[in-house]
Amino acid sequence: MILLPYARRGFHYNNYKYYLEDRFGERVQRVSIEGGFTCPNRDGTKGSGGCIYCNSQSFSPPYSDSRISIQKQISDGTRFLNGRYRADKFIAYFQNNTNTYAPIKKLENMYKEALEHPKVVGLSVSTRPDCINDDILSLLKDISLDYDVNLELGLESLKDESLTWMNRCHNVETSLKALEMVSKYDLDVTAHMILGLPTESKEEMFEMAKELNELPLKFLKLHHLQVIKDTRLALLYEKKNFPVFEYLEYLEFIAKYLTLLRPQLVLQRVITSSPDEYLIAPKWPHTTTAFIMSLQKYMRDNNMYQGDEFSK
Image (tube, rainbow, N blue to C red):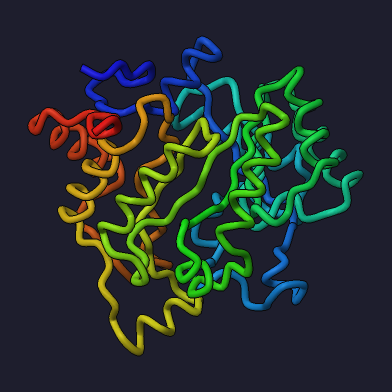
């Protein structure tokens, strides 16, 4: 059996929840913060309109609002998450848009304001591979001396055709160079990947899983492509319904995908879920929790573990 340090309670893959429990000795939740950032493919610097699939309102919790202070967002968020998960420690998660896309002093002030909250024990910053530099990485490295720091890079795909289709306005070479730069600072890095793009076959996605094994990553965040209202992807889907993952199809696919990953990678997410009022497709009959339970059962029944196919 493959040794998976953060697989327990029925999981056959490393689960971020248990990583955090081991790291802090208790349940820890991310609290999302809306910093009011934009992106270079929104403001005209590199492009306009943003990524083809993006509607940030579809994944913004009710307490996350750039019109109110960071401290108030965290206080409201921690109260909400404590009631739901009984968590008492939190990671300040700058999630929406590109959270390093601002002058360094502004970033420093925002990050430090979040870290001043007494219940915050860490910082997670989501950004693009083309929006980091040595000043930003030095700042995050300094913060990491006292707090848990996670840099989340939106790679989304390792195929240039897909990145062009998504209107990412960067290429794979940019992503690889960014990871090389970050590795010099010894920061914990997450790669964010989208599965089920119409520009990619399942075999191509499996090959990308193998490529991810070679990159300097600690965490991986995966989700299937969703068509969300008020996006350019929604307009494309309305004109021609391209294939999206069906429920059982994705369950079987992601189980196989996990077997290809090296056993040291920790999975922060394997599925996404958008509110019904935003979601166009795919619409599945089960909740995210039900999907995770079904995935556990499927992997148990088929004796599948993360890393099974890694060395083959």
